[in-house]
Length: 286
Image (cartoon, rainbow, N blue to C red; front, side, top):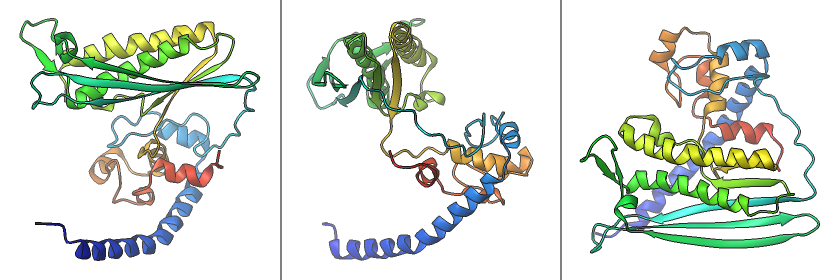
């Protein structure tokens, strides 16, 4: 049966009107939250966020002030941006052979007295057993096929390796900003989804060596590494505000809160806000 677009459009229109009506209330709540957070002194914020491991949400640790805003430094005259972004085509069980495709696209942009731009694409078709499976070194039978979410983790490591190779080829006398798409935090490995030998293969054999290589590059030249998420849904800063405002003990907190909301005041003033909501209000464009 086909999609009834008429009924769908009516529902979309109703939803749009409800979002528009809630926008003003949301802005007023954000203003009230910022006002409350501005009244928290730095010592209180630092103390309350110093140990949040037992709370049911992840919160940033305050080191200076809760809502500090700092002017950016003056831009450099001559510098380089090296950026890499990866994509992949997953293993397809309908194909006659098992394989996956990784592609790493990137650019090197040189600013200053000698501007330049280089674009590249590096595809790689993985077909070998070593590439298709992660094996348990302690067992002859333990193995996991590299596909789905695990392939995404492998690709992330390969992106960083490609970035390190790219930075290594940049003019050595120019500062380099290395950029990768996504996050440097491998959140899927934080739970119990993967067995320990898989985590070791991704982190110990992949992520840490390439991060150490980038560190070594930074010891002989100026290198900064950053990961960019275009529309993040992080809440660590908002949760630091929530934690700093919270007057309740840990028992009440664990019973009343989750990562997105609380049913206790004044903590519920931060309900459903994201870090980007706070940043868009406090930071200037640029």
